Image (tube, rainbow, N blue to C red; front, side, top):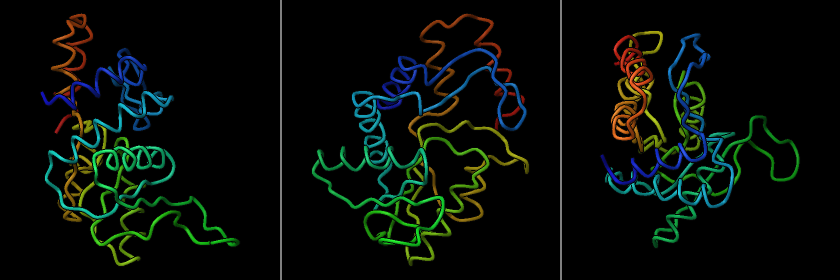
Length: 212
């Protein structure tokens, strides 16, 4: 397991962004774990999270010149990541969107830097993929191409058409996804932490039933 993956899961557990139990998802599935990056809600936690994102992005070798954070969770993530990259001597512009166009002041849907030619979209997880596809549309309308999607967790879970949203994004749009961690990593992490046998078995069963 990569250090940035282990560090992310440690951080998520400390902030209860990663929980184990029974959770009803938007899809109606009962999941034995829940991941909510929004629970990392202080400066120290966000700084550590940004280090993990930056390390995963660097390890991917993806070439990019701009970052984009979809509203709402993507906004603090892209900001923190841009600050971390600057600390690593890689200063790049970042942009985010409004949910509704502003009709006064600077106006428009976008806030921040002009999107670059090769944009990395930064978010937490991808579920249905609706927000990400809207971001892709918005950026392409600005003349940008999408270099990659960067997320905290790949749930490795089938969607409505038997593909995961990440698989669909790669196959339909030609866009790769960089995930700091995956469900397989959570299982390995839980085994190393000696999580109770029943919970670990439930996660593995869930992976077998709904996983890709």
